[in-house]
Length: 377
Image (cartoon, rainbow, N blue to C red; front, side):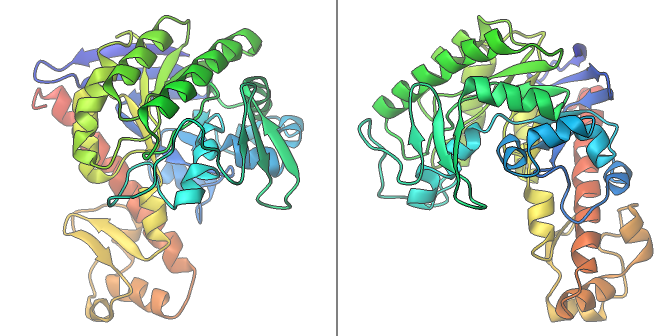
């Protein structure tokens, strides 16, 4: 992998770049489309290209469970397996340490949507997984069989899957973890990062992940530590507290400590109202399930805002989802038709909205790139 900076903004930390991989070149900043189980839900690989998604990120934990990394390796790697010839990432499995651990215990996500009484302290242990100095013991959500993933296992799995960019194994901490717990967790993440570098034998690009939760001292410590290691790029992971408005400040803490000439990926954040703020902080790539997650619930993103397409009023709207959109869905189908399909329980509606939403999100990021080119942000 090679990364080249084409232009740096004079108004912010935004920048234009190119990530070159053996499966093609990606213009940055860009949205990395989530393909958890080697698919973008409801779309074919050909349709993923048609919505202009330049890069995908698949889930190491879920692909390890099914079909298994050895099967993917035998199939020639994830690109051949899913018939997709553009760049791909795999995450490390570290997010599942949170989502199947304290996230599940307390019913919280990476960003708290409301105040929460729970607090994760240094002596507290998650109910459903076991975190040790060597890695994490899980139970398969499919059949309950025991699973162990540590830094060595994560890298081995990701090498067999065969994506262009892989990530170091880490612990994504809970937004309700206190400072002492987060510091102890960070020590494990840093130790695991060194092991990941030591055991990697492939020519894949390896990104280290900055953690530290909402704590400024820990975020800066982690960014400095990761920057001191020979990673090809950096992920910014973990949680961002209980107020997403604080995220740009927290990104600034990290990004000023990272090497300018290496790419920065923000893990799991990328709603439309986040994008310009993140990019102005200096984020190059980011992934988010919002366009596909909302689509499967009948919500379309448009220049009018979010449309809940199941609503009866749209049965009378013989117009595209978005009059300003040139995707194949907006050129060929109406709100009325999509509303009818949703109300009739037809799964085609989910595919149509997913196609539109991804096209809309990718066009939105492309417009931000144009703003950087024109010197507007």
